[in-house]
Length: 316
Image (cartoon, rainbow, N blue to C red; front, side, top):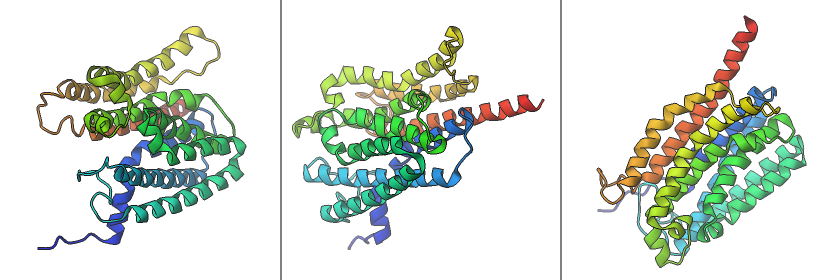
């Protein structure tokens, strides 16, 4: 019996891997919230929606191009729940490559319009981001993938969103987004850690393969627990030194609600050789992505909770 083929729409949706998009869209939401709550900018809703659309389109384009290179290099052979359309045989590498190019052009067009509205600093940020997206696969093959996603799906996304709302540069979205950016790197590291053996066979170098199994465990722990320490420092250190540095609002202690999830992930990582459930370590990257989303939502909620409490205090 022939397997029913999915619709063309479903094929392209799977090719774009939309389940990965929260990693790139959350920094845009967070950076925009920072601009409004901390800087006092008036929310330019249309510009925010354009930035969000541009990030979605460019991330999808990068996903598709990465899938093409991974398939051609023989890295993607087996179908998994998060596989793209090429390995499933739904679309050819050429079709996905062409689709990626079209999306890159569309995303760049949106970016250039935002540059026209916001200034040339955004052009530099956007150009770096697009370059990372295009050359991401090469960076990933030579142990720079973690740093690439740290920048693109963390720092640059938040900073760009801030500039679109404020028309100016600030170190606040750079520094305050580091915890979220670390968790995006944790997602990729969990994936590469799982694939260390197959990557070595195909002469692909990742941070996980360089660190080895025990080093990867330490690095993963640093990436999932480090954000709590950084946020604690950003709350307390500016209050202690009183040197004009903007302190994170106390409402950011709400991120501690994500700590139990981090401990669960740590347990999975430590029991990687003897998992409680067969898929615990195999899908650690997906579980880390869910944790990243939860952490990002809590950070954003902390900003708006601070905004509401400040308004209430001012009112009374």
